[in-house]
Length: 190
Ligand SMILES: CC(C)(COP(=O)(O)OP(=O)(O)OC[C@H]1O[C@@H](n2cnc3c(N)ncnc32)[C@H](O)[C@@H]1OP(=O)(O)O)[C@@H](O)C(=O)NCCC(=O)NCCS
Image 1 (cartoon, protein in one colour):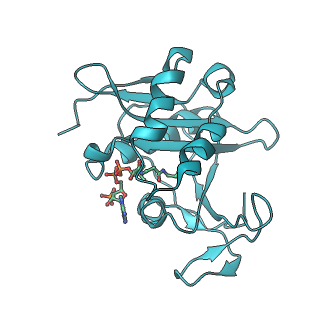
Image 2: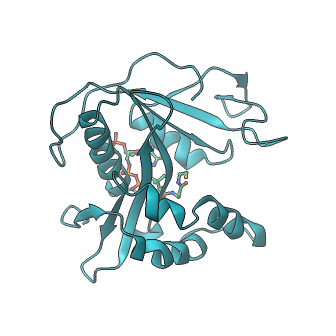
Image 3: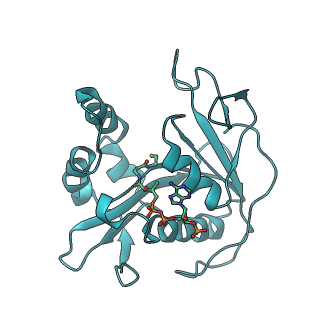
């Protein structure tokens, strides 16, 4: 269904179209603050200064179908970080998120990354299942009733987070659409 949708690098002009998805693509069960919180997570600076290995998938009408915002760590050599990912609700479960992640693994591995990390909220069960399916391990922390560990107060007082870590095999050149190996056991929090 979506296998022919192209992946291209993120551009600054994607800022407003992607911001519109932050309202349109999420069902927030009536929480009016949730979309604003997502918008604060994605200011324009990401589209200006963190675009190198961030990506957009477009549909046949050239509309945004999915995106991944990630970067190489400025401070931790060999580490990459996935900050935000979104797939159009009608297209979820068809492999787009996995394609974006595998492409990101290749791009950051070709830049010397051997470890990629990301975080999600304890309530985002879909995201937790997705990251586990893609070979991420949950960092050891405080046990949560959902059957995974959380890092207490990770993003501020009361803002616990599930932290994911995945090892990557170093590669010389990115090879689009082919899967990578990985899935190491270093599970300290990012
Ligand atoms: C999470 C999200 C990005 C997944 O994208 P997707 O395109 O639906 O995922 P895919 O179809 O590529 O699935 C990739 C793998 O994850 C698995 N997966 C996806 N959703 C899952 C779930 N809810 N539970 C368990 N596994 C899941 C798939 O089975 C697949 O596994 P496989 O490679 O072994 O077949 C998408 O649901 C989304 O946009 N959610 C809202 C935004 C969000 O929560 N982002 C994450 C936090 S910022």
